[in-house]
Figure 1 (tube, one colour):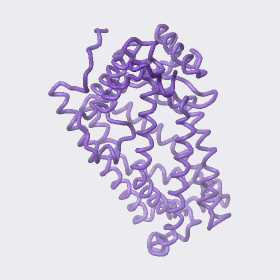
Figure 2 (cartoon, helix red, strand yellow):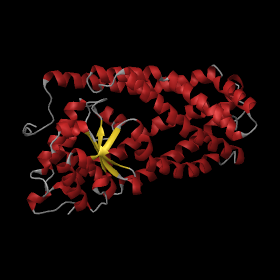
Figure 3 (cartoon, one colour):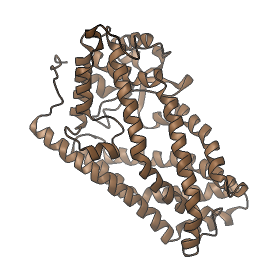
Figure 4 (cartoon, one colour):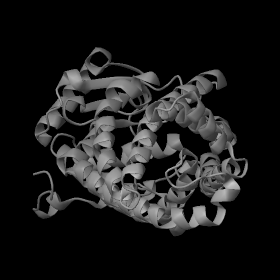
Length: 403
């Protein structure tokens, strides 16, 4: 690997600069179009009265509610997935055109099918619970379903790296692929005071599908692990990867995971409450036209999803602002935990973000509106500026989070 170039700011060659700006505009438009198209899909399902058809099939198949859920839910989830395929296909074609993805269409289709299967299994469980709660408590279902969904969501977070992620990528012990990197990560983790032994550090084969770079910490408790993509190992130095992993470790050390789970739960409660407040009015106004008998009818789900999608989108800027704050703190932690382990850790961090931005074609000049609406991380230019300027040690101070 070549000696890393000294970084003073986020820069791209003219051709890649132009591509990054174009891609940023495409993503901005596609995010808005994707939201509107998602609403259109749900409206079509309501307009075509597909949910009542699936409900009737489910009710004819069995009088047992859990069997009805097993018929109705996969049909509706798959219908939504198929109708939303145009935006998914377009997004993948853009990723291929701009060199972010190298995944062929057959492999992509297989991943889409796996994703739909996972969505149908998980979705059926949630839908079955949702309508059981609605029938038991028509006026408090939004609160009780929220309570029940929290431990289920936490369980999914626990099992994702163990069961779901391996469905889409190959994993191998990192020590078998890069012993030097494993030792460096172990040293950083030990300094951070975290318990992630080498046997829970993994290499992930991303190169067969993507050119993007990533290294992350995932899971909780016994499933917690460090994952480093093979693309990252190929294009970053060991010190740069250690900084990226230090950033991810910061999310755990600074309790960002429980904080974000609590904040996400609060947002979810608000979304459910507004859904409850509006679904009755919506069904009074259009329920008969859509063939929906009431809120406790399986067929009311598309209408409820329409409302929840709108409220979630409206609250996204708030969620993203909190996420950007935590990501900035994690950047700071990464700088602090690698200070003393890595010579010129600020420059190494800037080099890591330069590599990430260059490969991912991060926008060099994102608008404030774009960042406010859709960025859940600080922009790459801002992150590099911070890495190059943060240096409390030169003034005799110390880090705020890692000493």
